[in-house]
Image (cartoon, rainbow over all chains, first blue to last red; front, side, top):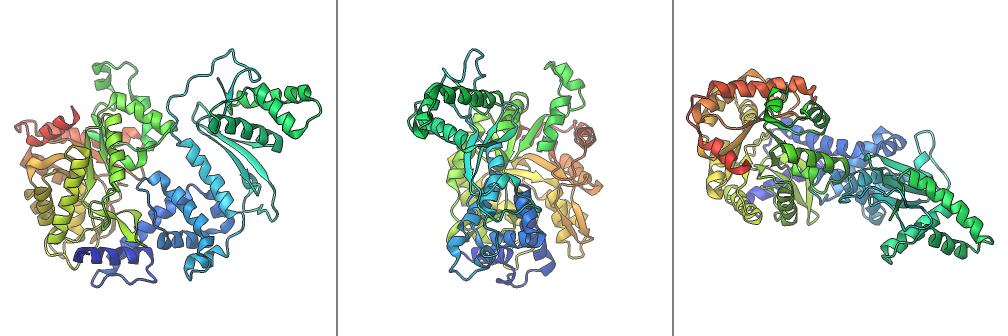
Length: 261
Length: 306
């Protein structure tokens, strides 16, 4: 390592964790403080703007501590600013792995509510879907219908299953019990990101549609998907099931939550 | 004249942009003096959705230059060549002719891995650092297949191990890397105040400017800053440009002839018509120096943007 690099690493070690690493010798304290604040504040702002609910449920002090330990313990490996929240999410998800390590992070990990990682994911997915690259999307042809045409989920979308009602969490509602929660998040043609809460059967239907498309590369028509699902669920009246299913698919289509081809 | 393209400004520029794309309509508009815009590739690479649509709008209407923040030319870890390939692809996909970066670093080698700190950290001014940074600039130019420009960065903490002045370091790097210079007028002033040590900062800034290799200038930045104390300025791009900085721009134009100049405003962004007053002020400074012979600098960007 070159001499000036040794200095640089002492400089950055101090920026990451001023308590643990003294500033390099003979650097003016007031000037070092400019960098300490600037590095921390930049990262703090970039993360906080994406996770307002996490911040609210933890409270200002604990939230600051959490980001402090992100700065001191995580190697963010992306130069893209938009991906800082994703880096933070990776840090959160890595926290339990560090349980046995004697670090500030593992101490904080033990104080976090059990729903926090899923809540953070739910907050992050909005940003991820809003900025997902999809290429050109063709306008939907008018003469298609949900039963006879092939159905796919929008290119910018995600089908999500959480163990907590993440969409309801706030400073006043902190879930204490598990509650399976199914969501579809997607971007519409006005670039707005929408969330739809799904019941378990609709979630199962959309999962089937998605896996046929992505895994088998063979999108199903609405009728086929519903027939398959009725069979899986051993539903006594397939025609009735298809009729109800068509209503649901039409409602989703109306909101641009599914695409027909 | 150019303007740094912040997200907040996009709908305003779009609304003031005349529907008729005839030259006369554009020249009559309040944004007539925006001749090019600048973006940070770190904010736009791989961005889909609204951002992608906005970028396409600008690509059709304005010359764009890329001014990077996270390449970490002075960083202790290997150059991020994967990112550079993304930059190369981004430049070509959006017809962007020029990429510039800061003479600074923003990464460390934490737990054996490259860690981004997302800030502009000061490189110590030593001979080793000159060679190291210049080599990385050449490597960058090789990967991109084009010359880049480096910006004189603002900084706050002098490294006790530095063995030369900032201007000596800057010139040595430019020469050793044979790259272009992205001249930041405000940064000259900020650093002159921050490291004046009881000397006259105006005099220091003028001296710095007199030692600039004019033939390497590709374009310049002008911006405002925050005065934390009489001896400490922070390069926030959050206020109006102050008079001593305008004076420096004037000096630079008289020394070197005019060159493209871009207003950076990243914080406390006023409405576009207010911001345009400063862009227009650049235009009037340039008009005052029209009598100067066509400079090499204007040629550098013409080469790059046409």
